[in-house]
Image (cartoon, rainbow, N blue to C red; front, side, top):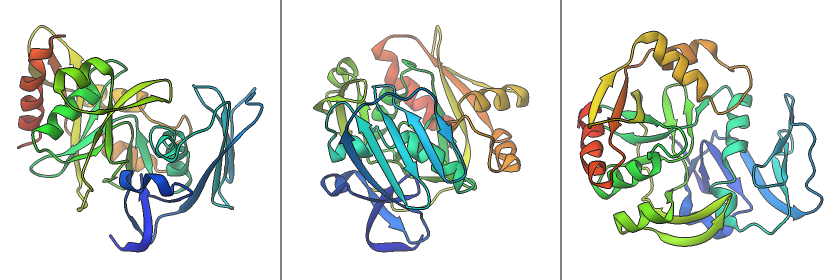
Length: 278
């Protein structure tokens, strides 16, 4: 990595326009594309999403749209309420990062990631699967967390996301961590700050979270690996590197199951570390 003096970023993007959120960013590499973030209040109607090789119009689930201009290096959020710099970085950066990943030959998956003994592991989970809670538990155990909501890959190297894990009220209370930041995106969030990521790691495999009767890790077959990963691709656009996607889908993958009880979280986090070799 070649840090670009004075620039900060996330998901492999150099970001400007977010001076109030530099604590959520890493040092940026000089080769990363630069994007300026801004917002304005206006009519937020968008009938159809559009993505070309140089422009994108994306709908926000919370109301509003994103106007993304690749050539100008600019992303403007057209929204019904003001957005803070912290919100722009997390969670509102995710759709931009996913589209720009396609534009720059990268893959992206709706997943978190953490550092294991031999490299990085992606953590995939549907909504309310306990993904952020599990990552927060790992962080409290001293595990290096690379990303929470989105995993962007330069080849097989994860590009670190914003330096935070956002929790709902109950998990934050159960774990005794997180600072309330109020409404951000579609829900209230309790934010656990993460330290910077100082090293590049290779992705070694995938862990899919699921509910079950006991804590256990079950290996997944090749066909199941590819199907699950395809379902979680972040950008609903043709893969910029089909061979890379196949390489990612061929990595070892496990389903880690646990009961829907809070006292199983620590054991499940231990199980993830064991799968990751650490």
